[in-house]
Image (cartoon, rainbow, N blue to C red):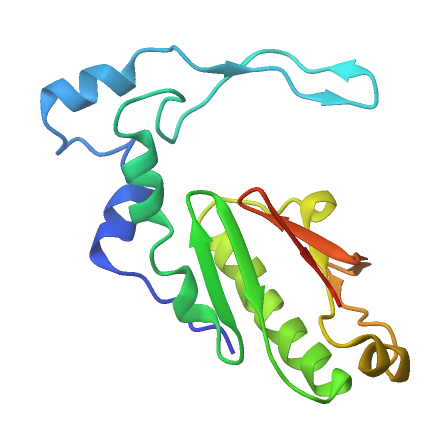
Length: 170
């Protein structure tokens, strides 16, 4: 069960753009209309829209503020471990029973998804993959690891590229 934990820094950052209490220098650098977007959906472009929250892309403090913003993500996991480097995150679980691994990963992914929604972020389902690691013999005895995220199955892969290193399932 996800209890929506929030630390003081993350709570502050979630209000970062709207706060009247920010020092004038920081406020001035983020308050003028400099961010607009065009969303491309099925060949149709949207109208321009002002982005009313967040940190400007390319800002010097952007990476640091992002890391601080997501620093409480590991607290929503109850069964799995997590590796985080910048915006690349890996959630993993070890075990001998594929059925139990599947259930526990699914529970934790649901909590992560809720955390993302609460923090105005979204998961890229197309970039999310699952890999079942083991020996060739062990993998041949087990069913495929099928995990759903938001009602859609996560793609299974035979390897995962993490920080430039290909990690094979066998």
